[in-house]
Length: 297
Image (cartoon, rainbow, N blue to C red; front, top):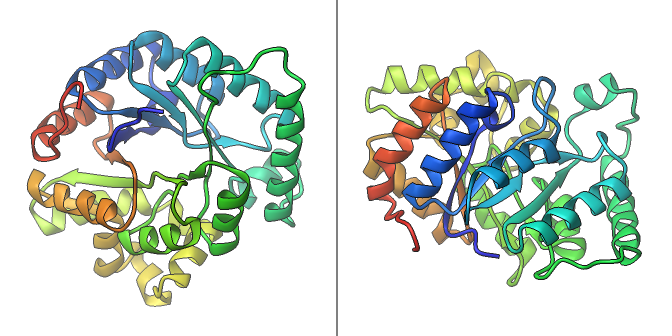
C-alpha cells in the first residue's frame, strides 16, 4: 500500500462540515502527502463514514482510520467494511483498530476489564468473517493496531500488519520497532506546532495534551518510557510537552519527523494543532518543503 513517508492526522476530518473536509483533503493530496488519518471518538462521525467522505473526495491519497473503535461495531462489521473499501478503492484504505479508553468504552455500556484479550478475540473473529466473504480486496486491506505498550505491540506483530501509535515520542518508535521487528508497518502520529516562541508553542501544546493526560493508556505508556508524576502535573512538564509536540520552525519540525523515521517508522502522520482545517492546511503547506513532500514522491 502506498502511504508514503509522511501523512496527515486530523480530528476535524471526522467533525468539520463535510465540504470543508473535502476541500482540505484535496489540498493535502495536491501538496503530496501520502495519507489522511482520522480518529473515532465521541462527537465525531462514525469511522467508515469519515473514510468514505475522504476517499470519494480524493483520487490517489491513502486514507486510514486512526483508529476505528472495536466497541463501536462488531468484528464482522469491521471486517466487511474494511474489505468493501479495499475492493472499491484498491490500495487506498488502511484499517487502524483500537480498544479506545475505559471512560469512553464504559460510557457505551461495555466492559473494559481485559482490553488486550478483547482485541485478540476480536481480530480472530475478523479473520473468520473475512474468509467467508464472496470477494477479496486486491491488494488486501492492511490492518494496524493502536498499540502502545509491549503486549499490544506484540499482538500487532502477531495478528496484524503493524501499529499506528498515537501521542508518542521518538523513543517509543524505537521500542515499537524492536517489538514489531521487520516487515510490519509502523506509522506513529506526531503533533506539530509551527511556532518558535517557547511560551506560545507550549501553551498550544498543553491545550492539545490536556485530555490525553487524563487517560490511563497514554499516561501508563509514558511512565513505561520513563516519565513520572512531575511530568504529568500542571499540564505537563516542559520535558514532556517538548517530547510529545514538535514545535519551532519548519526545519525543526522536520528534524523531529526524521527522528521517528530514523528510529524505525515507515510513515509519520503529522497532526497540525491550529483549531481549524484552514490553519492546519496552511501549516502543512509551509512544512511540505522542509519535509520534501511533493506529488508523486
